[in-house]
Length: 229
Image (tube, rainbow, N blue to C red; front, side, top):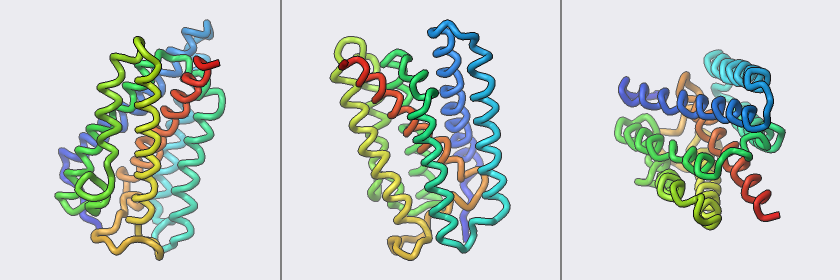
């Protein structure tokens, strides 16, 4: 049976999610000002689309449609990540890639408090130990590296490249661990199983936190590649 998280840790998690989404929307607004486009004209459709997308995810999760069907679980999780990849590769990612490098790098700093929340959830029995540094997830390093590197990104292009590379490797590792820790037939024999995707609002960790990290890395990569040409 799923063990609910403590109210304080859940509120911190929700605050992180709000922060990530807000940073995304503010980034789109700032890109419009830089491109001499009416900010509301660019930002409003993105904001509305984001709200509809997240609300749709929560409705599907709440309906119980995913329960007991491994194929639906994998399809749903994959679809959420594919959408995030698409957002990063489409014009939104290009808009965000024009933001200052320190801002793009510092954005990934949200992964530090997120990993602290996940560690708390391990201690509470909400998720398996594989999902934090006590197991096989070292994503906290990406948050620390991002916050340390951000102030130096104006001085040298090496710093954002390092932060981006570290973050990309670790977010890929998170995705691998999450799948193998989930209740799938080929998963690891961990207890408890990772069942956040089955519950509201915990399921937001995929489209907001993992998805946000992916979009941020794609935007940062596009920015770095443009500087190299």
